[in-house]
Image (cartoon, rainbow, N blue to C red; front, side):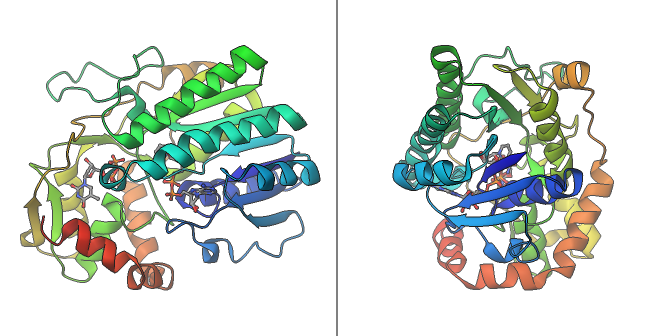
Length: 339
Ligand code: NAD
Ligand code: TYD
């Protein structure tokens, strides 16, 4: 099988490529990535010269580049991870989110229609369902939960999902969609909660918790997400949406305290800062469908996954130091300087 994996130089896409190469060593992977601020070629350094792997630097919005790649490579499967992924950046400037996440998705699917594929898989997010109240733990997101978005990021992802389903109904494109909760693990870009707190704590810097810190996310170890997508591609039903989540709801403040404890740092580093605009209160996935239909269950308990993640950041300063030494400094100053 030949796959085009877009966004494979980012967090989840790179973990997916590593997963797939181990699980299906006979397959060929072409990674298409624009290498935005969030894309990191050094992440893929160990496989760049491998015989059944190719890296192509291109923008999913560039129709000519995408069509050329499809014409040359004739992929069987396309897995679309490429996206602008950070909610805070989408609040600062939605425009690139609309371009990449919506128009880029349509370009990829147009290429699929033109050249023919056996599956287009769209990597989506539980954020398309909006949020749940903190005082109703019985409520979870199912695949039937209405789309109800809060941020420009989640709105762009929801728009893409609707387009993907429209291409299935209108053109018969063989699509699947996965909507996953918050991932954590190796190669997570330092702007996101868990790596940001680990790296700041290591430097004895303030740990900026938005608002009261009681917002809840449903954390999933990235490898469990990659296995879920693999199963959906192999056994999922075309035209269907699958929720992927870990039954692992945690308040932000508890995660930050846990990181302090694991690194032997004082909780006095924690600073409550101005809340995110429109901040979703709680996400929680009901993964019954993917469990019943495909037999998927998360394998990594949060206590083990967070330990593995913290150890990974401790041992891979060579990966994150160049990132935080670069443009990230300006970003951090702008986002947190006056917060
Ligand atoms: P990321 O920001 O770490 O990586 C995104 C990658 O896409 C980068 O390598 C970047 O260079 C590439 N990219 C961006 N714009 C591009 C373009 N126009 N053309 C080609 N490549 C482009 O993101 P992530 O956290 O790995 O998320 C991957 C996907 O999973 C996204 O679609 C995101 O919406 C979804 N998702 C993420 C989470 C999470 O917790 N991180 C949860 C659910 C769903
Ligand atoms: P994030 O990692 O940005 O993921 P998402 O917004 O997609 O869920 O944020 C996770 C949670 O952590 C979210 O409730 C916002 C909060 N947060 C902070 O409190 N401080 C921070 O510096 C960051 C980046 C996030």
